[in-house]
Length: 70
Ligand SMILES: [Ca+2]
Ligand SMILES: [Ca+2]
Image (cartoon, rainbow, N blue to C red; front, top):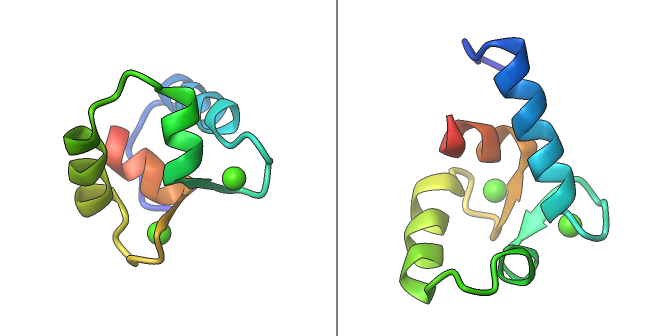
């Protein structure tokens, strides 16, 4: 992982990721995002998937998540 984030921020993002990853499979899907952020507008989700899902497999790995949020 090519991250220059401070450990603290990284730990924060990891726990946020774990909280959103409801089934704990190590990937956050759009459905899990929607469940975690019920008020998030669809446009924001669409934007996020364009920006964050770099390998375009329709779900977010921890690495993609961190890259998007950093
Ligand atoms: Ca999951
Ligand atoms: Ca992905």
